[in-house]
Length: 139
Image (cartoon, rainbow, N blue to C red):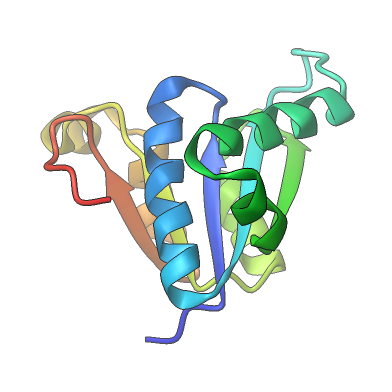
């Protein structure tokens, strides 16, 4: 599998940052472009530039300044009430090879109740890696 572009959706929480760590490791290993994506409802009213700055700040704890300068990455912010749909649309639009995202629910609950990760896994145009809170650390 050739990975040239990785999409990592985030809600700007510390839980989402865990998936970002994996996405950064994979982007480094494959010399791939990382697209950090944030989707917010239109009612939030956060300025797009402010959201992009928050995305950049979420990378800083995991990279040295030199690594950040070398990293091929892009911040993408979208306003949509359905994050699952927005993630799959951005993945198609950017011709992404892999989506790396975090799931807060356990798999059996996600199947019963639905989740963004479950929705993306079923509709994504590419492979999806879903991380969970109770997994073993490998990064």
